[in-house]
Amino acid sequence: MEISNVILSQEVYRADAEKICHWLSDKEIISFLNEEANVQKNLMSVVNRINMPILTHLFNNNCRFFTIKNLYGTIGFLRLVPKGEFVEIVIAVGEKDLWGIGIGHNAVIEALKVAFFEMRASSVVAKIKKVNKRSQNLFKGIGFKEVKKLDNEIEFHIDISSFIKKAA
Image (cartoon, rainbow, N blue to C red; front, side):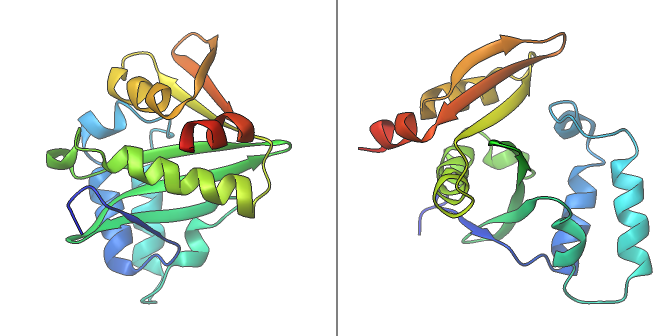
């Protein structure tokens, strides 16, 4: 398994949750995310209150949540949020030294398989901050099309036929 190969894991262990809390306290990482300002504190509070080794149920609230893992362990997270006919995707590679080597690309491809073939979504939407050029390039490279410019974000869409054409 090379470093950019990934698996999406649905199980979230206490150590994963602690890593996610750490990433969400990093100003550079959260500058690219659309999370609420207090998400890290709320998550840490819940993790500290619950004395269980597996915290999967906390993260799958109205979505499909995955940790992104490679040979070295948990390196990020990805969320697929059903919104009627489409699914919104959110991804974060928390290990900054692994940015730019294909991990996000591989994780998004795996997530699109889940969104289209398991969740039966007609399309997948990514809302990316305008300052996050790396993520914009990632999603464009996979075949997402820029659909809408919002105040702080750009909205990208891909449908199943575009995904299958790109994968072929």
